Length: 529
Image (tube, rainbow, N blue to C red; front, side, top):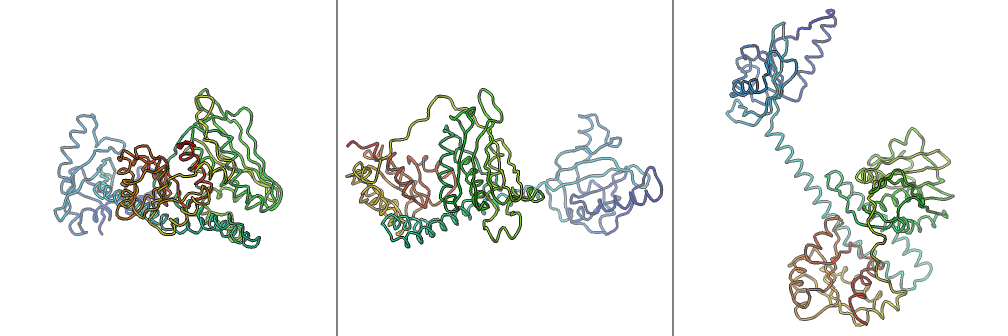
């Protein structure tokens, strides 16, 4: 393609002139935007390949054209710009954005173009260069990118549902078998099944979180909470892995740190568990310590520093910068020996950033590591958090308190019904009525009063949200607790449940502990004994 004209350097040696011309020509030809250079009369004297492709011309037609052929109304728009801004573009020193124009292709098609104009000296002559960006293509590209993100998010949500459904059966039945006094050998093997299932579930959750991060849809859900409760829950979640390796674990909150705060306790706990799990994974003997200190304070908020310190193998200084990068491990051999997809620390970094904080690590190979993150949290108003209902002291007490309770279990998957039904029987001695879809649930609710309804969200014929709305409209069930059951793990699922008239939702796989807590909150406190 013929690109006439050379950039004329204004000073320096001939060698320098050659280098400058060479660099200019290279940048000009490789620029992704369309570049059009015209003389003082508006005739085209130079262009790049991107311009020819954008406007549909070739090397034979381009030299005979003017800027008016591409941007017919540019003279009028430039005149308005110069009048309003009192700018002489021919004497300007820099590029000036001129706004959006209707650009014309050779085939007659038109598109919106964003144009910037500026001066350029070419072969000693003053010229004008126009930088043209196809706005229509940019909008379409953004729409395609958004559609791709939505498709990916939908795919991952569906995959989560498909994976969690059989996981619900595997983990639920394993829990029930562990509670039925197996032999020591059976208990050990069932415990291995449960640990492997939890590991797989953790990977699924990490992949979903990463997808939400990439789509910019991972949000915090702040509530009032007690810091010592969050730290205690994180330690409880880590206890089995620490005990299995013979490690001791301790935790400490500095007395200056206020305990009643407002933030997202689930995400704080997630980072602590990520850090603690890594500490347990790479520590063969010694201890793991969790600490919280006050980094900064104002009357309404605090910046807290959370630390997890271990006596493990440590990380070489030259590899520490890779720790918080997605899919990274410090080396391939560690990946093979210790496993893990390398997502937890990258997700932790993003969560800390959402909370106005940072992450970091100090480590000495052979001596241990200290992983830390900071989070800015509001100081909650008041002196106490609303107390949870008193949990039954044992299984016998739970069954006594739930004796005679009428429960409707709505679940389309046969295995899911079996697991939830058997859990209800084991936990509370409840023989629940069952329904396999929303329509059947609605018919049962019309003819029977219930103390509690467990409602799957995703079902054929009528989904759980629609069924809940219809059931809630029945006078007999205006106040009946309805608990959503979902194999989808996205945070907005809870809001969808609430919007449909449900009181709460439980994510699958179901656990005996979670079911006991729900029965304690909604069943034993709403019935008289």
